[in-house]
Image (cartoon, rainbow over all chains, first blue to last red; front, side, top):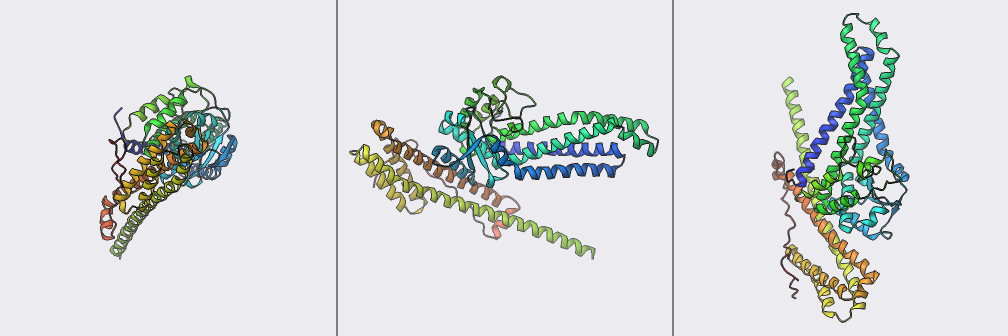
Length: 310
Length: 184
């Protein structure tokens, strides 16, 4: 891997994410139109279906974006702390907020011995960072700085918005495909066929078959793209951490410590997993490369960090 | 009629673009100013912390008078410094003097164990970091602003509206010296 500065890494990553998200949106709208067309054999109807799907996704995104943080923090047994409770942690977060030029986020401590941290909040003004007691006690000041800088980078890059948007689009897409498959099972497409021009029957069958196949694969494909985006954002947050601290070794050291820990974080579950710094549920052997991983392998992340020159 | 409409449309588009560029430059310049004043805020915090630190250490290492006096004098000089260059030099001396003060804790285990001292140590470490990070943020803001200023077509606006280039905060770090020459 070529020597890169974190500048180029960040620029490349942002381009990749935009590309992936654009692909995803095209895919989403495309599926909507395809399904709509098979139902109604009419482009206008197809557009309406795609439009409705997109609107539902947009509304859901906005509601969960504005409602999200407090639910998540409540779920995780997190308690907000102030400076007197843990001066070093508060200082570290304050230092990094200065480096980033951001308002200071709220700080939460999670009462769990497993090692992990996460960030949440819809924008830098309404943000929170959380860390488990297990991780807090095991890191040096330098490593703590690296981890907190990573979390702050997630906030800075609006990753929480990204994650919400993609999760919602997947949800709506899965629902749409599900509805479509059921409707085909109950003969929706064939009913209309007799009303329209009787020619072109062969092409229509092919179309229906393609739509069916895609409707089955789409949810899986969507999840793969989602995981790819998620991994990209993790690398981006790592690079962002270096941009703030100018010290890749802090975060690398923390990741090395994290990879040695195979204790399962008791309070996490599948839904909240992507927001953590390492996957909270998989134990060490499973944290290897896989297209379904929300986080890149820790070894890869350490390697990339150590190859950065500021 | 047609032609008039098109010309009007072009004028509107260009005007909107120009306003956008101007506002971007203003925003970035203000961010630089904010970042710059933030450095002073952090410097002041450090000045305020030092007397407290010296008092704590005095309790345990009373006869290390020289070290204390060096720190207090360096602090006062830093407060009174005029201009960036003078201030930078004074800051360096202060950092060096503080380092010597903290080195005392190695010779006095009671001092090292004192909770007040370790809290102050954390506070001062954090303050040093905050000064460094606020300078870093200033340099980052200045870089962003300078890029916005110099790239095309922004440079055309920047020139006509007096957007000056911002200098970077650069000080010479005494990397090869053991202890800085604290002379008054």
